[in-house]
Image (cartoon, rainbow, N blue to C red; front, side):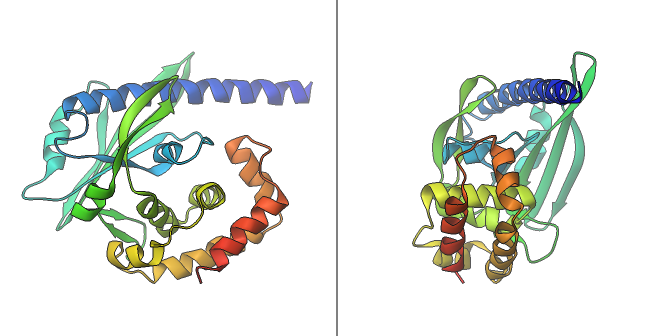
Length: 254
């Protein structure tokens, strides 16, 4: 009986996550129309949804993260005026060359509440500590590419970063979900030759790369990591050999 209850809870959770993705797909299509296909201004998707442009493996996420370059004035002021009904502002700040807008929506799925959030970061991507700063500039935008990703039962078109930039962003962030993303990316696509050179230009504090890589290697080396990795992406593809391959690649960066 307990096993059936656990299975039923997993099914319900999956249904909610699928419903959430359908709503996020609608929002992405809405913002795409409002910005001429994310061209005016140019807006690039980062975070968990951009992962789908680099790997067939994907994980559920309730957040959609967008970045755009800071120019004269603030694009965030314009985006605020474009918000659709049902999407409210939770956080809005403008500080020098950096701006952040978090929009949230509360969904009702069969009597249960589900939250989604859409983040817009202008000028820089910042983490929770001062050393985590990635510049969104012309080079970043020029290297980004438009891709179609599977989301909410359809394919949606978005801009995603160049692979080097995306991997740097993930290493800079180094949250548990990012570590699993990095392991997947390194296994599937390897390490780009220009990673260190690009990090020196893209990051305000490039030394964060070595610091976080050491943390990631420690985490991935843990005997519990493999089960967590498999569970995150709901796959049996990952093996001890896969894990060791990823660790070897990451250690070569130090």
